[in-house]
Length: 293
Ligand SMILES: C[C@@](CO)(OP(=O)(O)O)[C@H](O)COP(=O)(O)OP(=O)(O)OC[C@H]1O[C@@H](n2ccc(N)nc2=O)[C@H](O)[C@@H]1O
Ligand SMILES: Nc1ncnc2c1ncn2[C@@H]1O[C@H](COP(=O)(O)OP(=O)(O)O)[C@@H](O)[C@H]1O
Image (cartoon, rainbow, N blue to C red; front, side, top):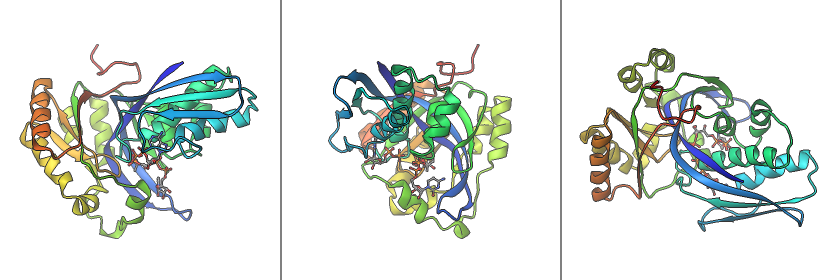
């Protein structure tokens, strides 16, 4: 069975406070994009899970989030057969694009089907938060409001047609480090997430984009100025707006025009500011790219 594990961007990312368990209360607008890892999962006769990957820098043992997610379900359902997972990574790692979380989500969806466990998406989402705060969203996909630690999800209408340019500099950012080093008292500008929800409901792309904001961005950009360089380049080449995704360092730009985005992508490649440059579109729950009829 082959599965796609889609990447996400955060159109808006606000942090409301810190909980006693160390996790943070968030309020985010999540958006799936047409960039994905591929998972091929198969039953195998010998028990246990084996995982292979096309990249050397992700673990292939129980530290891999796809492995962990598969194991969680297989343990609960006392599956005696084994599982092999072939993981092909295209989503940059430790990039703020939920690559690992999405692999975990796809593994859960696949294992549920392969071993006929009969769990609903809702039941998978409830279990998946044990793997990571973003995993329930990666099961749900599309445009959504994420609250709590990221697991309280409200589905939103699909975005109007637009294009997304991804630029990932060569640096990596650990999510844990990003949360730990964030000083909430010094956050002076919080994005207007409620306003963005209204704009999404109204299908107003200009409004949505004007409210894009990420409270992680100033701190991470200070450490890695290349983030600002990529952002500026994208805006110079016609992005309605560009911003860092999640805990970074990936920058995405929103474009109204595909040809304009391709020009920006070429300029970004020439600049060598980004190690990964990828021109794409949003992904919606119905499998399409827009809410066009
Ligand atoms: C920042 C975001 C924004 O979408 O994405 P990424 O940048 O990782 O893609 C997410 O909140 C990342 O979610 P996820 O990557 O699933 O986090 P987890 O694995 O559960 O947690 C990693 C670490 O981040 C911190 N953490 C995570 C989520 C949260 N709401 N509060 C936190 O403080 C905790 O210190 C935790 O140990
Ligand atoms: N399937 C996986 N894909 C990518 N990274 C993984 C995976 N499983 C575990 N990891 C580990 O999780 C960390 C964060 O990965 P990732 O999900 O790509 O970050 P982010 O949430 O910032 O996009 C990496 O340091 C990596 O070693």
